[in-house]
Image (cartoon, rainbow, N blue to C red; front, side, top):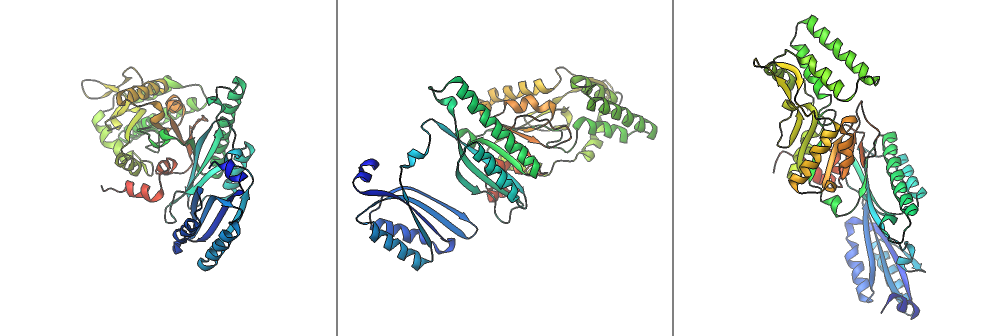
Length: 432
């Protein structure tokens, strides 16, 4: 019998909500009550908050038997110490939603210790202002986890997929999503909460390649500056002071917008002219400071079957990885730096080209790529990836990304992918 026919024959749609302790396993007994009266389950959802379990069931009740069924359910609630609530639905569930297509988006956010209530309030306010309703809310982290992480799943009207939609309406839909995304990222920065918003579809769960920048991402400094500091530390005091002073001058010119792009990189590279490659290599590894969680994240991604790559504008000799690209510094016959860099220079556009090359090599789409980085040199790479994660750093660029890390640990990336806390920690352990 169709739903409309059942209602016309004297049936009503009932929403039954039950709330009780999760330890009592009362749901099994309740379903036997439902089965006893041969009720049809149209929909059922359950979530747990702390020690309390809440279950909502949508069913059909015939008017002539509704009083007996309600009596049995209330008796069940009394015996099991479960709160029971009823609501009659006057319309079909499908009437609540627009007839045009919609797309589910996962909004994930995390912060060490706990997420401020103000963040929750403003986030839901942003969604309400855009007339977006939440379908699902879940805590991904455990109480013992170092991070508190939550995920909202919401449906956004996707008029771009409708053949009957005008061009202006499609543009308005795209603008709305862009606005929601930018507001959520800005809200995360305000409360220092790591945030991500992405389509909750098959590709969201089937990423295949994670691409990292090196400077300010896997390491907590500029890669080339570390090499120059290694050279200074190997020099006489007068030479070291001169080298650091020249580097500082170049950085000031860069900050003022007078020295940008390849020119800024090449002028810094020339500061290394005449220095021994082997001596710097021995020194530089003692100066490298890896970002918190970088090793654990890469270990977890490997266990989960992801391939990882490093696309860096820094020196290639700092990177030891199967998929690693960086600038090649030329040397002379004595094994000293010449101050020149082999062409092509790995800059913003070259990183984008390398990313596309990797996707073709691995036979995956750009939608299956996660790119982690920030700053002007990462801009094009991030814009191509299916999910772009920007990391706070001194040269952070305001770009349209899907996720933003305000915290210090790269392990947050796993949470932003929707991986539960206990699974993230298990995968990050140095065991198989």
